[in-house]
Amino acid sequence: MKKLDLTKEYKQYYSAKTQPELLEIEAVRYISITGKGDPNGTLFAEHLAALYPVAYGLKFRSKEEGNDFVVPKLEALWDFDEQKYGDISMEDAPLKIPRSEWNYRLLIRLPDFIKNETVEFIKGKAYARKPSAYIENVELFEMPAKKVVQMLHIGPFEKEFETLMVLKEFINEHKLGKGGSHHEIYLTDYRKTAPEKLRTILRETVI
Image (spheres, rainbow, N blue to C red):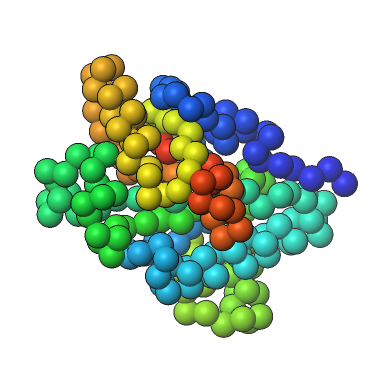
């Protein structure tokens, strides 16, 4: 049985250079869960613990039906209250806005053959296996096609502002406007990888 690997099927989506680049991203479907707060906090961990059983449940269900796939990389959209912090620049936001004030949407991409009703069925099975109040909050999320400026960040999350400064210069130089939430794709597992070796795609949605 052939196993679908979305990172190979959509190489452009899961790759970035160490210099800024402008590109178009296709519309994508995910399973998702939203929250607010420190990514090192308990709630963030509980949201991950709700999202992954659904992702792997969909994988194993699909494998039984002859459509096995590799569970893709974790992603997240990040934003904050712009009325409260609107005067803070993109590159300064990670330093000046408390982690407790960040809104997030955790994402795991789905193959096109996954049906909506299958997601709901697997959510029920995941809850029955290990009840969690947050499993009910896992949902399908469709992100429309968008234009982004992106760059590969190598190193700890605490130094993302350095990469964001380079992205901001590129955005200003090309007279682009803000078009949506900050988007990150975690190419390495931050729980198992040394901070200096972390590889994260940073994307800014632009118009």
